[in-house]
Length: 381
Image (cartoon, rainbow, N blue to C red; front, side, top):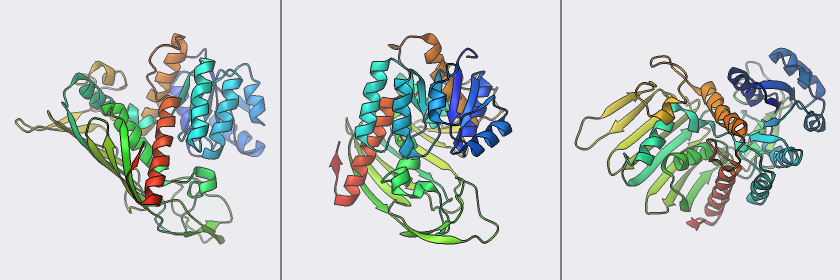
């Protein structure tokens, strides 16, 4: 993978995570672009990168760069992804793919015409035990899926003084808790079970219609502020928490609870899938074990151990059993699938990563969820 050059757009929370994961894979990270020349220079120096770009145009004109990673605010995703594809660059984009389904549909079409790798970083797919759950579903070990229930909860926006650009609809989109973290859960459930949603019913809540914005911007997950800072009131329309019920094609049912105001939960995705043969339960805060429930036999607690996993799941486990893997490793595995696809040079092959089409699906779902909440009814997709 050293023959492929990548550039990372974004120097905040996620951009450096991309850089670290790419380096672990042996992908050559050519440089980085921040929100300003000063930020680009500081980040490139801190991360030891060869180049600090002054503009996105400079990135796209760089022949050393074959792939672009977008770790920038949501409103920038569509334009930057479109321009990268038009410049002949492969694209790995943080979710959401775009601000609405019209934009995301355009990107899906453009990527198909360009014949380039176009991925959305739904990294939670790449926990080895989630890949094991997917393989169990594909093998028929789950049987018929009856229900899929779960949650994604955090506490980093618990107080009215908690603020980040993601709370603003014009920056992140109409939905927040559902779109920001809930889409990870929805994508994961589709990836594991293969089931498509046919209708949704949602109830959402904005706890703080007004938040206090610091005069200086706050980094995502930066934690509590130790000293008093000047603030200004900002109106908020995005939801802090909410519940969504799902009807899946084929008859299965599901529900998701998403919250960014649940004290003590730092970043917790949970699911329980009930099938006719067994049930599965997994928690991202304890990612190296999965509970398998049985009616007529002993329940199991499966540890993340390559020797115990299916071939597909073991391929995403880089260390022996007992050597825990976690959040940063999912980025490595997501990008491994992406760059392996690029190296294979076969656009017709099945991608092992979440594609622009997957990103478009989640945006369509979010639009249906927002409509369901506004109209207080079930909405069919």
